Image 1 (tube, rainbow, N blue to C red):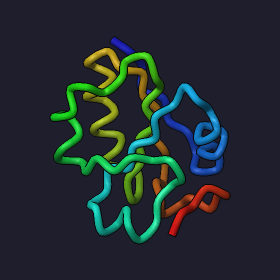
Image 2: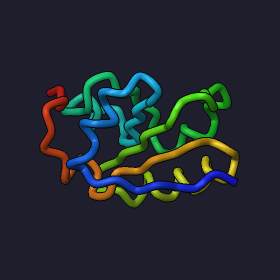
Image 3: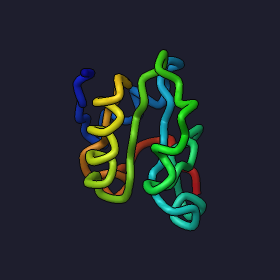
Image 4: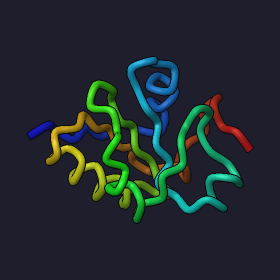
Length: 101
């Protein structure tokens, strides 16, 4: 079973710049449309596990509003063998340079 790693919102820019990462926004579509991290894909919390085509060769970087939902989904995905990172504090804590409004 893969480990679940947690990063701070301040560290998120480093991961956003990496080609081996897939940023996944777990919030509802209207929240994503109001502001998200550049290049992130929107897969709402309830839909994420239905996406069986998630790449296992990339690091999945999950974030939500405050970090609790991404942690729950991150644990599930890690148990399935995915490499997963979650953002503590989520979008609420993010103040980086890749915010798209």
